[in-house]
Length: 271
Ligand SMILES: [Zn+2]
Image 1 (cartoon, rainbow, N blue to C red):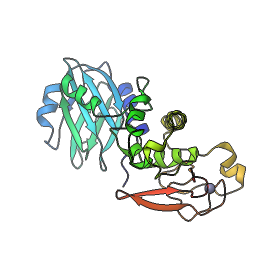
Image 2: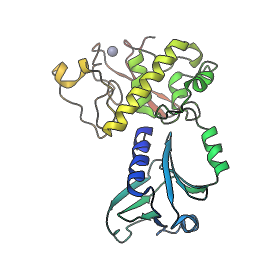
Image 3: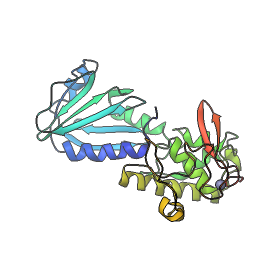
Image 4: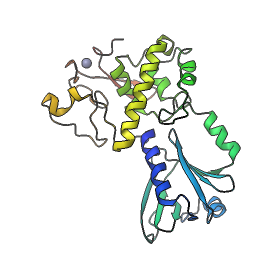
């Protein structure tokens, strides 16, 4: 299982605004675990939605915010017209004028006060998909730390929204070894890495999948078979251990960092 990366949460925020913003949806918790919170916002104007890293926020009138974190198992389904009878553990159901939406299995589904929303933002690093992101905040952490760069970029308090695919692929594209201590990353190196994360993640929001391969390394350009993987998308190293690097042909390496798999090309990412 893989926690959804930030681009999918930004896509959900946009979709939920299209489905419900400006309406007063009926909100319930068929399973019961969010019954009290649902009753507080049901019938209230949904003003806006936003994503911050892997966190989804629905802002209701009266300064009430619904906070959702999908975690490993959370999943939304939605549809037009009348909702079906609830199936399984539906934590949250929203029914608007034209659409319905169900949420099952989230790590967090709770109401936050404005102060709690501020506290959430304060514990997250800048999100490359947000216009208000300040990459200097992340570099202040990275440039002081002996921790491997890959671990820092996966730490949501350093950068928000980046998961293993974006991190491993951005490090490959930058030619940086994943175990490089953060404090060895130059300011210019960080500037380029951040710009690449913004580009890769923005493309993923548009396409709904993560593609990181430059035109010269696409299957058609190289005369190779397209990637077959449930995550979709063309990538350089993620889950390609032992396969030939698209750039230099060396076998892609795999290692572990804090219980997570890491993938890199030892030749291209020598630093
Ligand atoms: Zn290589």
